[in-house]
Image 1 (tube, one colour):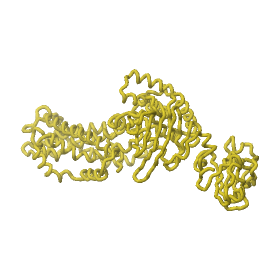
Image 2: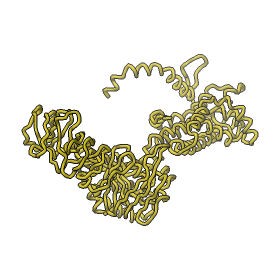
Image 3: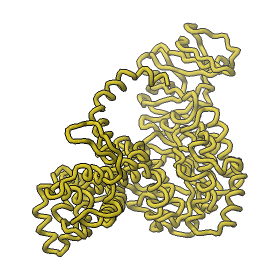
Length: 353
Length: 274
């Protein structure tokens, strides 16, 4: 089922949290709502599932306009960050609750609960109470409860945020597996870009109540619409260099000695124009042609890779990720190169050129 | 066990302070089954005749079992009303968008702070006007009303600790708001319900002033009023009988305390947030 949000506006008191937002989730797709906390992504989620009323706009589930349909009748499944399991019920009762409310027969309920429990691998936990489960198991129960009614759309509100690092990896791929096996359209709300990039078909990145870009993870990583998106995606993050154009060359701020020729696809920029370059750590390497000189001020060994921070003479930083065999040390003066084809160039409003 | 042995000075101190209370209770019991010669503290004869009132009644007084039944009805109906109203009002005040919530809560608390004795003449007049004077229903209504402020505040405090997500999950799962309250939220505040229930029952059981003033006639008499009339009666002054009836009166209280003392602590553990 395709989910369409049109012209969604939401105010809390006098402040507009979301202004005229449009969003489409395709059938069977997993879409991430990615953004810093307070950007309105959870508000959007609550509006789609009907917990919050919309001040203006429409929500369509397929052909059905559900804008004024109460949450109970929208048939959405939701997984909360805190799992929100009912503590006084067993796992079986938790999962069965949506069906009990609909007064389905005991036999049907039992069969469906068994089916879904097998899908999320909690078949042997059905008699336990939530307090006797680990975080990952609680997450699975919560997922089973959300899926048992075969919802039109699955909402995941920061589902992995409360798990420890290893479980998060495991549950991340589990979420994707279960979503793909059931074929239900899903919306994942998260502030973790790795999570969004690794398991979602498309990402909608939000800031201050607006969707800045909707694209596939690869597209968004390679061609971000602006410097905010570029800065939000990528770990370790992109580094920015500010400067002014002089005869086709960017003179970095603060120090006229440091210059970087503008890449070929950005030509004809007038003198005096303020630009910002974005260089990802994998594009600042010893062998690339456009050399930039600096001193290694920080080295972080990450096992397979080493992360270097290189301070330029004007004080700006460039990051570089290199294989662990790299021999550079803290304090070394280096002259590594930037891959000119991969430089991202933004104007003074942050929009990519 | 290690913790216990460390605390022995505190326990010893508290024990010492409690000795007078303990001695009083022991003597209360001992005197109901013995006779002591005048002027002596030590009993010299075992007897059950002070408990005769259970089977034979007391001359010139109502039937003790009828009075006990009245007390039980008074205490349990009061408890039921308090639980019903507090559990719903507390939820509304904690969760729903009640206009003037702060003023309402402050007003309710003010009612709680009011000494009920100061209201008694007004209540007396009102009950007489509406024809509920000298009825159990009338005094039950008054007692419940006076218990409600505390009950509402306590229940609101318990509801405040239930996470919102549980309710959201219930609504998304298709349950109506009422169903969410009954099946999902109410079980979370069960400790509060139990504590408040025991608390109200004990308050009703021990209430004296309201029944004495508002329902004094013998067919709606409760145990506290009965006991008072016993000691006020100068004709047949029998201290041991008085103690026996008193003992009879506090037995349910002691039993309730033994079973529910941990639950009662919840009232204070649940915490009240404004």
